[in-house]
Image (cartoon, rainbow, N blue to C red; front, side, top):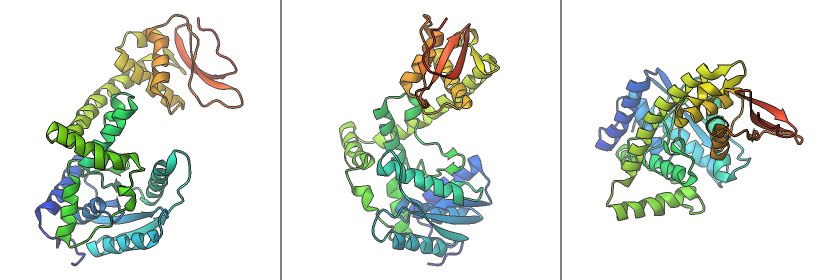
Amino acid sequence: MTGQRGRLPEGPALLEVRHGVRRWLAAHGPADAVAVALSGGADSLALTAAAVAEVGEVHALVVDHRLQDGSGDVAERAANRARTLGCASARVLEVEVTGPGGVEAAARAARYGALRGARADRPVLLGHTLDDQAETVLLGLSRGSGPRSIAGMRDWDDPWARPLLAVRRGVTEQACGELGMQPWIDPHNADPVFTRVRLRTEALPLLEQILGGGVARALARTATHLQEDGEFLDAAATDLRRAATVGDELDTDVLGAAHPAVRRRAVREWLQVTGVGGLTDVQLRAADDLVGRWRGQGGVALGGGRDGVRLVLTRRHGRLSVGYVTSEPAGR
């Protein structure tokens, strides 16, 4: 097939993928130029073709994780396909997969870092589908850390765009067939050592069987509802944080008048603004207890300590403050 825009097949699957891109552009665009993260798999290949048809200028970014023999050849084939489809450019980005959290987490960090560095201020289209969203919600449920963890992926999280969150994985596979292209199948996607693979191949099919189908779509809808609720609560929390902020501290009287769901978000946001990240649910609830269940207790260790010194949130004279201390001071 040629790679010129407007000359793609008009099959129903590819049209559905194009409609996903079109809806995203209508909601978050317009965009004269985008980058697309292309692995060569069905999802990203169909997305690349659809983006070429819907956006003026598409630049393909192919990340080579170098975790498998022949990965460089796979990456070059994906880049060549991007050029065939009509992309304005196609680059292979080689990365080193190192760091904490296992191979999955390290590969993800390396991939996103490379994409961020090469995007040239363009939004980066990612090929996450409705099925990926359902798996993400299940993973969030397993963490048990509240609605934020099961709200799934957003269709726009600057600079990351996910136009296919309403499109099933089977549709992207069909779209590749309509394009006359055989997508690359990553062997890691069939390796049960990875939790997400077992969710995809074992847990979700079993749930679909037990509950009579529609589970993936229901999980994706749940994510959408929680995102909408979360946006409202986050906006209320921002207002509360601003109202309660006194210099570098928070006024506990102002916080105490708010609902705990909003108050916890406000405290989290304030801590993040202060530079404290990676909060656990236990830490956040203990921090909230300094307001909602105040009994004169000591401070809350937040992590980030160094050389025997801990970063601690304390309450003093009706104010919350953060500082490095060698021991927890008594609250009063």
